[in-house]
Length: 76
Image (tube, rainbow, N blue to C red; front, top):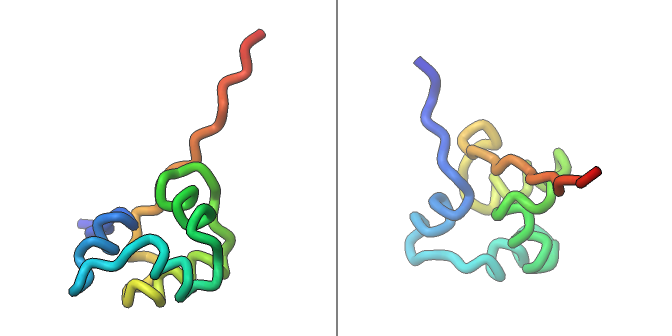
């Protein structure tokens, strides 16, 4: 059976006290908007960003259920 992974927003909210997106972004060294886009599946994080975010949350990269990046539909 596979290990349980959690979404970024769940891991962030589980911190004591709850940590804001701005705080995680500051710890990682990115803008809050970039972090928001990663957390909401708008942008794919780089390998280094994944490691930094996991470290800021006190978990491993494998503990995170990274959101799937949504690709816009192109109409014909």
